[in-house]
Amino acid sequence: MTTYPRLTQKNPSHDYSSPYRWLHWTIATGCIVLLIAGQQFNLPLSDAYRSAGLSYHSSIGTVVLICALYLFFKRFVRRDTRPNHNLPMLKKIIATGVHLALYSLAIFIPLTGLLAAYYAELPVLLFGLVDISRYTAENALYTQIRRVHELATFLAMALILAHAWAACYHHWVQKDRVLSAMLDVDHWANRWQALCNKLGR
Image (cartoon, rainbow, N blue to C red; front, top):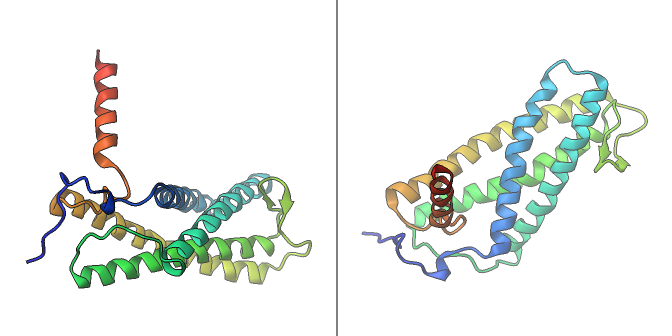
């Protein structure tokens, strides 16, 4: 029978480093913002609003891309030290597969987004400075790339939900440190409780 490190075991070897955590949550936050905000482009928008939206969207996507490339390098190329949760082999294989898919999508989706912006009819200013769109738009290529970009985002949504569900399952059902390794749940729960107590006075 497999035994799991319990939540009461505060072993540093079960936690990710601060850079790992910052990269992970920067990518996660960026992806969620992009996935939600990206749906607005299916609405009838003015050219000015669409151009500004594409610029913000592409800029955030570039930040996600840079972080994802570095995290991919740390995880699969340099193989930085990570927590060992003593999970069954099958769970480790599934987790590694999901992580690889998520990292790959975090790279692929911004790349296809930037490529779509290159062929966009409207100007797309990256970080408000550099216009990455071509002077001659190619609507056919833009449409095809955007379709691939959207399909990849739907796949990312499904994997993110599965990833989040698995993390919550480990924390509240298995009661191990899989989630706490990336997010100090107890710390933030205590801070939230302290804030609620302070506001309730």
